[in-house]
Length: 257
Ligand code: TMP
Image (cartoon, rainbow, N blue to C red):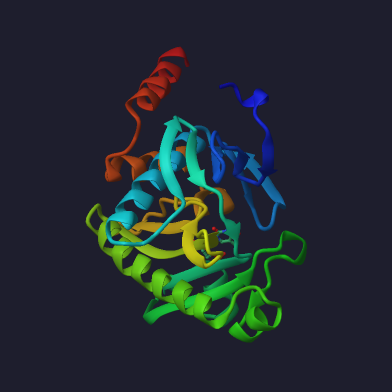
């Protein structure tokens, strides 16, 4: 099915969403487009869509195995996956293990300081407002989620953090922080349930090499550090998910140049 025959539902900064083949499903198409600082910096990271599709698939499958419900159904092709349609909870949930990024800046904590305990932060998912920080009071008052849902989100976020810390550590990476999103699905009786949605990839995580401290994530793009494509490939390689066709494509390009 070519992408121009499908019904587009939504276009985000890094993904495009199309109508799925069955009711209750959607197709997520992972683009190479990258943005930072709320869309002020724009660029492309060659091969990012292919790699993030693979990494996100891998992580969602591992998380399913430990009982974290999520929207992933199956991979369709190099850049696309079939997902469950959810009602997105408009929150960016950030979990931090080590001070970095906006946290280091806001609180004047040196980048790289380990936090005494993981910190969960909530931001409203709203680009026009610059994703402002919100507390649980804002979340309840604005009817974004109810207290039981926020409990679920917190518990799942901490569990995801514990699991991913170990998983990345096993391949020589330190999970500094990450951002996740959640959505609601409904059963026949209209009861809702919170599940993990969106993606988990080097776009939405900070990952540093355990030994050298080298940054292997989107900070290389944000901070113009170079070696962006290589960093994404390295994470995929360490997780054992770099698609062989993609390696072949990159090798072809190397031969041509
Ligand atoms: P921050 O330190 O810039 O607030 O970012 C915290 C984490 O969230 C980091 O792993 C990058 C990720 N993130 C996103 O995925 N999307 C965003 O829009 C922002 C600001 C951060």
